[in-house]
Amino acid sequence: MSWQLTVNDIEVAVTPKDIKNLHLAVYPPDGEVRVSAPLTMAETRIRYYVLSKMGWIKKQRNILQAQPREPEREFLNMETHYVWNQPCLLKIHPHSGRDAVELDYNILNIFVVGNAAKNRMENLLRGWYRQLVTEEGGRRIEYWRNILNLPPVVLAVRHMKTRWGTCSPLKNKILLNTELAKKPRECLDYVALHELAHFFVPNHGEKFTRFMDRHLPSWQNTRRLLNGLPLGK
Image (cartoon, rainbow, N blue to C red; front, side, top):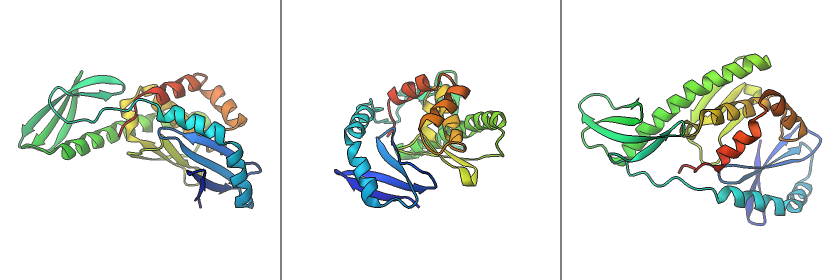
């Protein structure tokens, strides 16, 4: 069970694990700080370790928090939205049928009943993004799990503000962010493999790096690309 530790006004998520050493990471998009700690390690030791890394933590958080942010969308005709990193123009179609989203080359068509409110169209588009990530993410996870000789993996997709993906190896489950539908497809592929890597390696140490290098040599370039793209709301 994870718990929170506050160090120099920074919230740190601590997860006890059956490991020998502490492992620290700062996660996009907002610079969430997470520590994996040995099961029996005292809080004072964990706190001291985090304090000793505070300079590095702040540097990484500043880099992530300085990333450009997507502008607030108004959901008006001819507004630009992104699908797999390609700019698409929004076209709103009031009609009497079911609400729907359809992509026609670079035109993102939203079909809504009457004069739909902004939040309704936003939720509709987010649901469509969820479907894209579910379909493409499912394909990429299936591809990698076959290569890695893993059992079937349960995929869930939802909007997240602090993570591109998470995993629960004991449950054979991966969670992906709907925002990945706005990014290049290779970013989704990288995140899918990243989470599957944690089925073998619980942290981001040397073994993790070797694992990723072996299976996706370009992963560090893709990670930099993803972390350099504008963040959603």
